[in-house]
Length: 129
Image 1 (tube, rainbow, N blue to C red):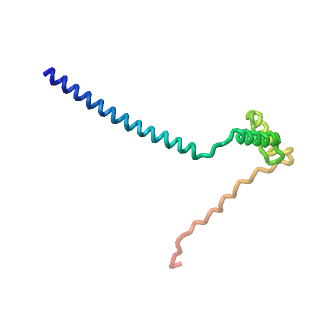
Image 2 (cartoon, rainbow, N blue to C red; image 1 turned 180 degrees about the vertical axis):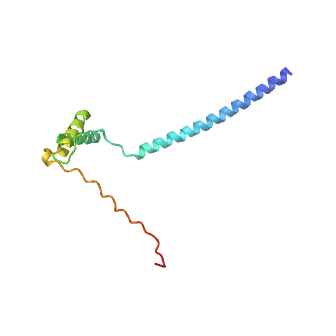
Image 3 (tube, one colour; image 1 turned 90 degrees about the vertical axis):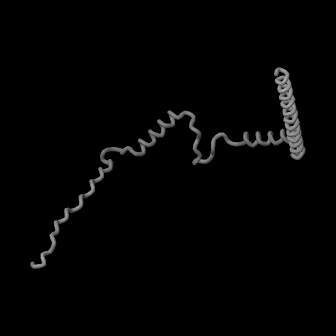
């Protein structure tokens, strides 16, 4: 009985060894195909010269430094960094635009809409009348 278990365990271990050997061979083949594909892609893309990169970077830097720091267009909205003061300024502008100059110039309160006239009750006509 102990000898049979020993043989079963040895057979099982051999089976697992074969399974692991096959799996690693598949992984190795798959990894080799992946690396070959990467190499092919790397050679297919045009090589960029470091000098070209430096030239493009310098051109972009020149373009950005040549741009004015303040927009010349009046419609341009600046980026607000201090939201609290921007809100206060906007509120002041709104209050100034909506506040009456004095009481004489104050707009009149809107009148309430007129109620519809009451309809007179109607009675069915008497055919004998």
